[in-house]
Image (cartoon, rainbow, N blue to C red; front, side, top):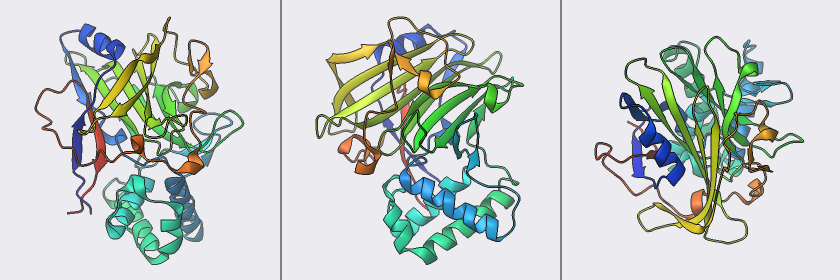
Length: 318
């Protein structure tokens, strides 16, 4: 079984996100996004891996699949099972790559390694995860945040990385979307504030990064800030990564929500001041990596008091 080690880098925080985090109750403590912080979990290669896993499951006459139709909502098709990432991770180790850097060609040209990665991932799911590997985090009351990788529809490109919030006792179909992007590698980073007294989510922050299609070498950051039971704020920034891997926004090209709104039930309704966000910023076929730069080499001490930690890379086998 692989031992996953996270490499943490400090990320600049948008003013709105920082303000909301600072305004949280004193009992609320920030926690990095845990199981959801998996670079490359939603890419063309990971969607292909999900299809290959399903082909094996069908051949083995298994009763479950990675990719499910009309999930988490009617009209959507995607996966929320971490077995896909486990297989991607195992293959990446064999090919000496990061999971986010794997391509569909890597899967097509390394069939034996892919088969071994799939077999190992399914065994891990069965034995270590006891048959369930949903990409979600929950608070003490059972409110859940799930990370879905969705195929393209008439409303959005694919693969689309969507963050779904489900209130305690509800079903995915009842959830609301609190973040999402079809950026080239589907990478997002997440932070929660839990209330120490109740153990419940106070604020959830999701950041997505991708290339600026209009300016090679420059990047876009989308930040979603959600207060459960409250409103969703969205910030869109253009900027670059510095030599330490920190995103530096251009203050003249920053747009934030004038009036925060309730989180929508449908992805097509994720809007920033009336304009859809996270859906059409870049062409996935370009296969562009995060920010057009490698930021996986910058390591920070997770105990150094950084306000937001982004799990940018994972990934050494033990």
